[in-house]
Length: 323
Ligand SMILES: Cc1cc2nc3c(=O)[nH]c(=O)nc-3n(C[C@H](O)[C@H](O)[C@H](O)COP(=O)(O)OP(=O)(O)OC[C@H]3O[C@@H](n4cnc5c(N)ncnc54)[C@H](O)[C@@H]3O)c2cc1C
Image (cartoon, rainbow, N blue to C red; front, side, top):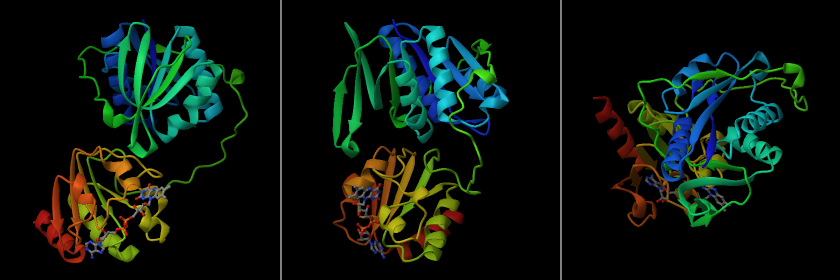
């Protein structure tokens, strides 16, 4: 029966919602194949994160809390994940498919000599193990795969799994002893530069408003896309066309080579709906498209479409929402 270790993700002590999806995946595996799951929280001063995940119905919450873990350095974190996985007899190590886990989990899998599957959107159990469904080629192909070997690692798409219903009883919290001198030191943290973003991250927001080539410059982007996003307390995103023309930063790009989002509401403003863009947003619950071309492919995936010029429709919509 699988013994699962779920890796929690947090930013400066606040839990990332994707962790709930990873716990939801683990619950699904336990329901299908038996076993149990633990959640591992790594970092410095992570008591509040541990307290938050303690209601995800895990067998236990393991906490590696040390100033030496203040920065998520891949060599240190992978080493600790592998050590905890060995100690707990974990047969499956899981994290959400995020930038954090893409850096760390393959290293942990290598240390554990584990087979790894990424971008999992479904899981089932058969007579001799777990069968994973994973997306490939910008979502155009869904592969069904099995891993051989005693230990496995998986990253999951957070849009595909729901956070477990919270339990009123907290899981036991167990401290993982850390010896800073015994940690690898191949990577040294020097500094971090962060954008002081006033809007939510598109991968975590309930509402994402994205602009495409219809937007002519960065002032218009802020006024139209930023204005509509603010009226909905949402995040902003953009197509690659705007990133390539220098109008938006690549941190906003949604799509195959950008961020993958699955908000409750995605508003595509002046975006044609190229397959590479759809790969990043087609799992949104409700898609709204505004485009002056009624034949634009975005309308094929949109739940609601408005054929209009964004320069007139968006200010009108924003004003009505504010009113
Ligand atoms: C390997 C690869 C990876 C890629 N990765 C990504 C990715 O991650 N994300 C991504 O977005 N793209 C990606 N692309 C690029 C992608 O193929 C498209 O070129 C891009 O998504 C187009 O952006 P767009 O829809 O903003 O622009 P366009 O395709 O030019 O569409 C602009 C749309 O705006 C409409 N429009 C114009 N003016 C107005 C107006 N005033 N009012 C209303 N509507 C108007 C037009 O009718 C049109 O439909 C990738 C491409 C490749 C080859």
